Amino acid sequence: MSTTWTWTWGECLGRRFAIVGHDTPGSGDFSLNDLAGSAGRMDVLLRAVNSALFVSHGIREDTQIVLHLEDSGPRRIRFDGGSLRGVHPDERSIAGQVRAVVRSPRPPIGVWEEFSSGISHSGGSLAETLDEWSRQGCDTLIMDAGGGSLEEISQEGEIGFVLSDHKPFSEAESELLSGYDRVSLGPMWLQGHACIAIAHYILDRP
Ligand SMILES: C[S@@+](CC[C@H](N)C(=O)[O-])C[C@H]1O[C@@H](n2cnc3c(N)ncnc32)[C@H](O)[C@@H]1O
Image 1 (cartoon, rainbow, N blue to C red):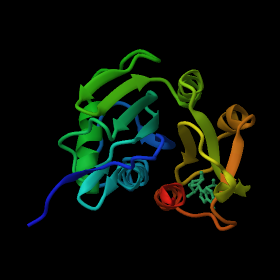
Image 2 (image 1 turned 180 degrees about the vertical axis):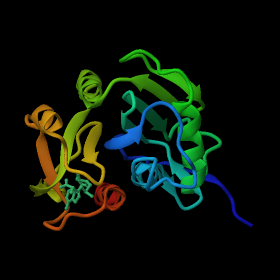
Image 3 (image 1 turned 60 degrees about the vertical axis):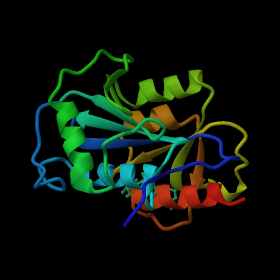
Image 4 (image 1 turned 180 degrees about the horizontal axis):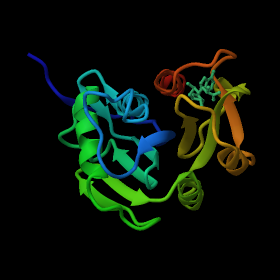
């Protein structure tokens, strides 16, 4: 028999992740049977949600992740570990929630509407997320194999990481991100969800 419990670190400060899905649809529909194909590599974003929020039999209450669905009308979907209910750590379950959101009307840019417990959505793209994080006092770092070592970062407040999906950041995104520090998890380019798991591991260490 398994038990469900909530993951809390007494000493842990909040963590945020933002991932950009360049080809994932922000409105309309997609098939749960083709998440890696016609859904524009939605599978990459779903694995990122899984790595950001779920531990064995529990949720990281201190963590949130914002998915940026850039195709077919940009929309952002935010999963908050502190209030997330009814979502299970399998890709299909998370995909079902995302599909329900993208089928619904998109809120205006910058207006976050709660869709269900722990899941909110808003219009807008990475620029709006960076702006919101900055206004909320979150230290933003770009995950980049060519950056400085994450091990050397000392977390003094809330920390937010920005990642891309299977594609490099676009020119416009790179321009937006040019003023931020970059952190590396080693010289080899890894998959985004693996980067999230490694970042948690490094920051979890006492
Ligand atoms: C699959 S990679 C993207 C690869 C893509 N071809 C590119 O050139 O950006 C997904 C994301 O994971 C992060 N990432 C991958 N490897 C990393 C590393 N070694 N250190 C830090 N972040 C990394 C980056 O944010 C990257 O955009």
